[in-house]
Image (cartoon, rainbow, N blue to C red):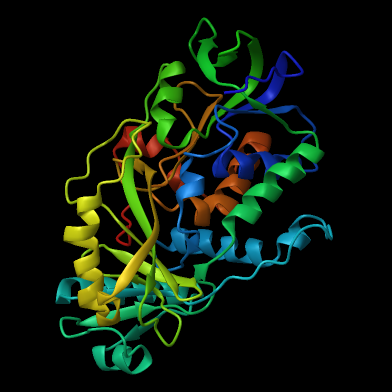
Length: 403
């Protein structure tokens, strides 16, 4: 790590973690005309090589069972499609599309089919274009699927699919820096609270500097619990390993492949140019070490490939081109985002536990967190159901569409 020293010894907001959530919040802070304070983003590895942000499938969907999650993704679609406008019409900013090949959820039993039906009602009421499909309809639209065991499918072809998350991430950081947000490659190793234990007064960096702070945001991804412990609190987030493969097919499909969610949990999508990307995890899914990115090749041979070849027989003859393991910042409480202030340490804020939904939720969550930090409440979309207080109250958010 190339240690960088902050320019100042005091900041209004210190963001611990500079990946997608920290970057989104920092940019929305810089975009708030009512805020002129100093912001410091501390990132332990500015290459982001092992960050969850860089290991993602870069997809977004509106097919959630909770209305608020649907609306969060709808804002993501609006933001991505209008990125240049949000960035003040800067001609350097690219015009980004969403490759809307959709998500195809496949149900192989009546109970899951009923979940898809109920979720579709919620999604349509929120303005999503989700359609339910019988096996015959699925086969007519996508003849490459084997639907012998399928009861029902669900798909949305509007603002649901692949997007260039790396471009958005890069421009959030670049634009925020140009507006005065300071990024340093360093690491927060300790925090000091006031005598009452109700506020963080300073953070200590690995390089030795003690930085006074008004507010602290935990945007540490899978390491969220380590950052929380420095504040004397905890959060139910741990790293869970997720595997990805990009492969080519001897006989490519004759049309775009939706991001298909097989009933087994294995997912696969169009990647372009006759290639496809798929992902999954082992049946045993423990927390792993923060530096554990080892590939388990038996998962591909015994689990992933057989499922792909059964669901899409043209994938019997395929060749893996690349593979990697990444980490979900997995919320063991209810698999949903954890936001807002701690209940006792009032200036310590969470933005953690996205459980694989982080990139598609980052525009709304960064905007909401910036609003909370500056104004003390959410001003656009009310995200308070995700606040940390629900953890202590033991009130989980029920979201049935978890991948």
